[in-house]
Image (tube, rainbow, N blue to C red; front, side, top):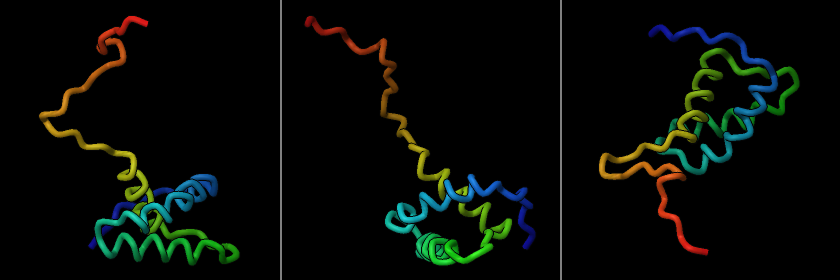
Length: 88
């Protein structure tokens, strides 16, 4: 199996990804997601540790999925300007 190569992330980005790992571990839909996030949290305190390209790519995908809200077709999208004005 061939995986797309991801450029090395700067340490700041790795820290941001690691920040969300406990949330992913708690809300994981699959066992492998929970195990990966727990593994990353355990390995990260090691001196000189940096995730592999594959690990970094998976961490990025999992963190990105936290911030995606899928709307159903029956839900309406309301802009702030569209809400009825109430008399104050």
